[in-house]
Amino acid sequence: MENIRDYIKNNILVFDGGMGTYFASKYKTMLERCENVNISDPTKIFAIHKEYIDAGCHAIKTNTFAANIESIGNEKLLEEVIKSGWNLAQSAAKDRNVYVFADIGHIQESEEEDVAVKYIKNADIFLSCGAENFLFETLSNDNGIYETAEHIKKKNPNAFILVSFAVFPDGYTKDGSLGYELLSNADKCQYIDALGLNCVSGPHHMYEYFKRLKEFSKPMSVMPNAGYPTVINNRTFFESSPDYFAIKMKDIVSKGAKIIGGCCGTTPDHIKKTIEALIYNEPETDESTDNQKLETTHVYLPNFNKKLNAGMKVIVVELDPPENADISKFLKNVLLLKNSGIDLMTIADCPIAKARADSSLLACKIKREFDFDVMPHITCRDRNINATKALLLGLNIEDIRNVLIVTGDPIPTAQRDEVKSVFNFNSRMLAKYMKTLNETVFADGFNIFGALNVNARNFDIQLNIAKEKEQNGIIGFLTQPVMTEYAFKNLKRAKSELKGKILAGIMPIMSYRNACFMDSEISGINVDKKIIRLFYGKNKEESAGLGIKIAIETAKKVKDISDGYYLMTPFSRADIICRIVEEIKKI
Image (cartoon, rainbow, N blue to C red; front, side, top):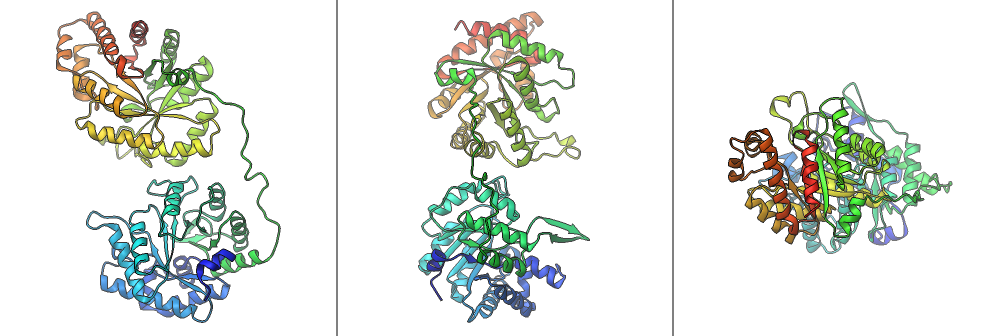
């Protein structure tokens, strides 16, 4: 047979389809693991291989996708399943000029054993059979893949290795890894020969994602599902026309794919129609506007960012959203803060996981009605990736350009039966996702800020997380309140080690009880015991005056080791904050 590398240079390599789903639909069973049928009833697997070959495919996968030590559980049985799967594929491809690929699906990590060891276990069995072509498919991360590829190449330098990632239309895998980053890493790996996408998306959405990718140096593979699954009478069906699938695959080839095929739900008929579409020179269905990026002349940069970029000190004030639909007091406080001359207002996103008015909707309202720039907090707790992207699109349209992303407080234990967390992201993953949107979707994107807990017991961990956040696109940090010498030292250290802007947290204390509560009950806040004692025995007016005085002293202390001030409004007392702002401006 022609060397597979030469074949791909001059031809489109067409794979078979979804063995597992086709087996289940053809033989009306989902009771037995498809890979075990390699041993229990090999004639059925052999027959399916032959059907795909007769449909015209140029490469078939061994029926070993889910054959690994985690799923099989027995090393002897695993070896028997893999070797039988290899022999069946080889027998079906004999004398037909069809390439056989050793198929290895995603293997879950575990604490007991390095995942690379598990991948290598499968690879070694295939190598002992004489395998030269390897497909690692439906990967949600690349853990252990490159070590395995290196291992294979050392044993067989002529081996051809294709890695394929399962990337959702939004650009992420189920593990939260960024598809583009996974593909880029694979493209740079010297042991990988081709890279691509498969599963989790139908042909249209995979085409839409694929055409947005930059051109990689290695051949690209695209193998979508037939469509999206429908469950009827507890059975899963993929309702998609082979003719439509073929049209979209031709579109995908027009965008540069050198290797194509099918994943879940794709039958021999899907492959046959695809090959016919490639041979028949019909006009492309691709819209002429597909690659035209919408032009926009609207670029908005808030004064807050202009001052921050110019090295000027900025003042940001946080105001909690209302707990009900009466926002009269909230809007009154917004007006007070705007008139005080602060640079930006920020709104928490359901703090302590308690439902309040939506921070992003309030930000849009304030921007429109008061022409006042707002930085809404966005938590990872309450939205999946689709809802997050939809929210960001809306915010961008409304000229909101700054966001603070936080993982979010957990749902209180007593409410977990009624209220469920989502947590598709953590704050670092969300930052990376937003950075990608800035590069691919928004002509005028977001300035992404994060939180920094200077009160953390192990500040080394916090600092390392902050550095990772910076790598993922965060340009600055708002810190927890600085109320101890320990927090002050950590702030100073953060300023010296982080690249981003740092706004020092200041929260005026309102009473002795308030000081005790903050120190004991609020996660991430510590109050110096000396400060707590100062409030003991003070009345309401005396406490307010003392709280303002300490806040101003803190502002003076952090002046030279921060890029600005982040004031948190206690008990909706915007009047207190305005008095502090007036004094800070004199510093």
